[in-house]
Image (tube, rainbow, N blue to C red; front, side):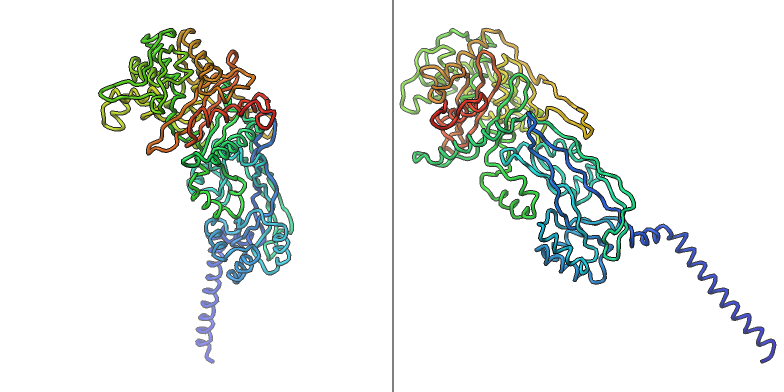
Length: 614
């Protein structure tokens, strides 16, 4: 071969070699400089895992230290998406067979829990039975990317009586993820009750472990960790024993009413609120029917949720806080206070109750007349309250005027949310007046509207909590404290970071003589010879002041039954409001339940031969 040809070929080979070297160098620069961090992370991902460790939620105690919500350790099955092999579909199918889940459900869980980092585990099944955990371990060679973890899960120890107070947990929604920082899509978040209202205190801070794993994504060595920080503990104002007693009492009362052969329909739901009138602390808050918040944490969530939504009595509806009802005659103390405050009557005025009052061409009849009974005749304020004389309150309401009645009602805690520390917030109800009707209904106010409101009917709507607040205000001679459910918040270190003090919600100023006659009238309802609640409290050893209410329901049928009260009369401690939907007469249906609730509060026998209540 000629020397020029050799030189030419040598030069060509050199150029090729140079280009190859340059290409390799360029590729190395791309891999190490441009995408270096990315590929380093992927390489580490093949052997390192950053496993989040769930923080235990703070415990919840009742007012005397009983645990009503804590945590238990459970096995959780998770999947590391980046650890799945080419046989992903087969692995998912095998896992589904062990868990009793369809492959589509597992894929849905993986899709819903997608992470920016493909080697972070996604929870697929919480709280698996021990036998399932064993099966996962026995089949670990066939389940690459599947890991078994232990984590704390909420446990409710007080039964269903506390469900509406405590609330429940569900997986974090997109809204939750926007609202709270540091949450993962499969984290459990408070959705109602105390769990929701105090989520930021209860949740704690997740920790993590840095571990080395093998080809099956199983941890073989821990390289470092940051321990989780538990959530804050909460101390409720509620007495768990009283709460359970109230639940038993109202459930039994509903069963008794349902068994009455003379009823036209069974009762609906019910609610009971018990408040400490000296502070506003909620001692018991029950809504019936209720639900099992533990079952909402189980894998039967979907089916149980469907059952709850289809139940005609709406178990998840908190009647004590969100239920709006006309209060009926239990509202009459507000009308009397308004009339006394306006100076349009006196405590000693004798009114001749004929059983009918004509207003604007419409005749309004007393309940005695509609039942074929004679009218009350001459009555003063105490007697009118004792016998619940409608036409007395019709007249006093007309004299006082709707604005005075509305202002009095609002000063006693009606017509606005109380600010109770729970979610969802309690309903504001409706205290109507001419401005409200003009705004909401585009209509003028008629005199007949005032007549209806004066006996707790018409557009007036209240919650059971508000009725308890109103009777707290009456017991305290005008002072209404803001209700609250959390007495204190305790940090994981044991430090008390919050201690609740009583806060005045509203105040109604009135002369002592007005409160005296109102207390006397409400005491006569319970102890008077013609009191509408005398039969329910005939053997009760503590002096009680209260008022029955039978609220008419649109469309007819059995009235809603009310009884609201406070006790003891001379040194009030507690206010109670009882509502039974479609219960009938307040004296016959609600007052016996209220008697039993007060008996439970005072430590008296409320059922059986020794009972102080019927």
